[in-house]
Image 1 (cartoon, rainbow, N blue to C red):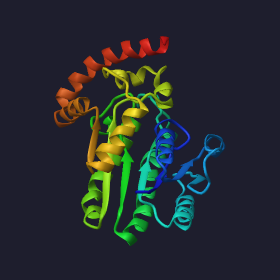
Image 2 (image 1 turned 90 degrees about the vertical axis):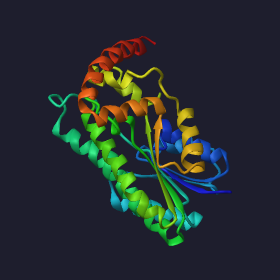
Image 3 (image 1 turned 120 degrees about the vertical axis):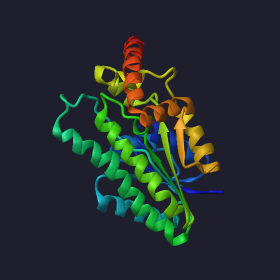
Length: 268
């Protein structure tokens, strides 16, 4: 069945891939990003009858409201919201700037909350829809070296899990996806930062195709609430969060492993 899918962060990485996937499947796609020139170039060959390409600053409430209303006017409803847009600035607390706090909270947290609230209000009118928010395994266990990112993703995960019972009772599903490191520009941003070593401590780096699979199967088909990718690493993260002393011990071990892998990736 044809759906209307609203996606943030469509100009890069996961957001770009998912926008392409849903468009190629024949759905109506509302592709949004702050980098509108790049997004326009990527979607220049799309059929304008089944897409809406808009500039969206996720930190701007009025911008959110305007783009959502354009989507409603063109397609009648929004069936799926994918809050993908996010940022990361690696750095230890002794090194990052105060402005970096606002940067992470405004985009990663408030951007997701604004979008969820504004789109949920439209979905509630029809008692149907699915909101999928992107957190991270860094939002399951605290990750030193990327503390601001980790804290912001804890907030996204907590917010998503908290609103799920309320919205589910009114016909709207909520899922939160918590992936490990994915091969996108966010990986590249962390390559030269020693502070981000723990990010590289997994056995494998995920691809956007891996994320596509969990969105389509785990979220949309199975309606899972919390999706840890990969599950094994997610369970390790939960263990570290449940027992902080164990987590601190794991941090030291995994950081050494991460530094080696990070250096290896830089050579590729």
